[in-house]
Length: 251
Image (cartoon, rainbow, N blue to C red):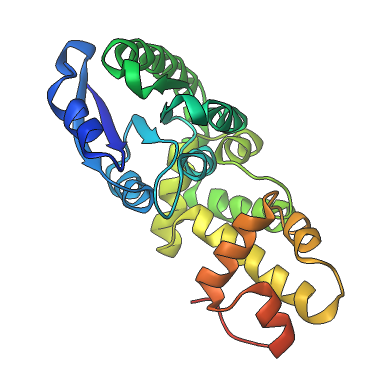
């Protein structure tokens, strides 16, 4: 059965997901329903779901950021966004992160099963493609890990995804992610983010580049997201870091 994890900050939607949707009929099991984006990402890291259902607007981390996280770290996972009419255009922005579908909240009972069916078909397709790439697992793990490290060092300044890394190394993406975690104890894209932040610190200290220019130079298109992640890792904003000549380490 397909594993499903969902998030919405409105209690009546969470209750509808838990009590009014026949998940078993769709060959799914609803493993968790949480109330914000960060909790959802924590569940994704721990539970490795097949389908993620996310409200487009939530406290802390919104649905687009959830889509970005899934796109970068677990591309086989399908994301369905829940949206209100007023957020419809905002939901469309998530298409660039390969959101599978979006469902209007007022029609959730009727529309969500169709979206889940669409996600299940895509999962079957991805599973078939992954089977064809399993020859990558036949490589010696140490060699494959070194190839991964080299590829990341050469390409972290670009918009990397797990799918792209797997394609370049002719390996299964899920296997690469597990291999990296086993070798380093760190999530692959947490490590890539750390590398980007270290490079950004160099730019801040030794160039006059603007924050958005540095963000682009280290492979992060959204400068707002870059600033948010920089402060989370370093403890101060990029501007404060530059002003203080701070030489702090990643937290």
